[in-house]
Length: 202
Image (cartoon, rainbow, N blue to C red):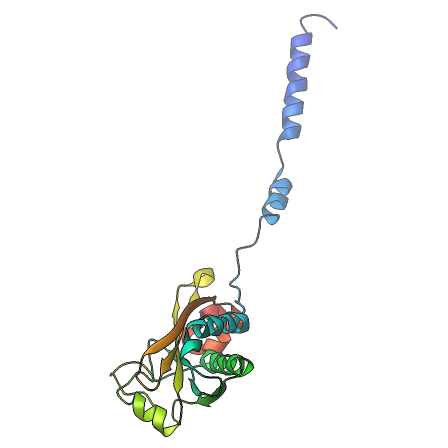
């Protein structure tokens, strides 16, 4: 090959090689399709988290109670509106009741509307009212378990923050407590009800 043609030939060969390394439109589409999908909200293990909360709460409360003591277990209520509850509040109560029973205690469930166990409007939290002694006496209970939850965040950052406490009915002292967080996925959102569901959940 003549010497003057060789540089031109090499230049053409390099151009072809570079062109072969540049991805075409179809290659960009494939690469984009391989990117991870946006994260979806996921549910926490409500049963396990609540059982562990009871374990932690009772680790300090046990020294104040006997195994044959009666313990009232109230429905968990919405911390932003203490007059309301939800499927999550009722499920949490049932889990607490079952866990306490498994420990050998004698739990008894109470509802928002039962007897003197009602919320005193704008005077404090559920079962933390001036009538606590009356509640314990009327139900022959040595202790009361109360719980609240508050929902915060949006999308994958949305969580429900739960607090459970056990109160000595004799002197109104908190003898055990535990706080825990649950991520809010589709099932938890359903338990919370329409009030806390995002548009994509409805």
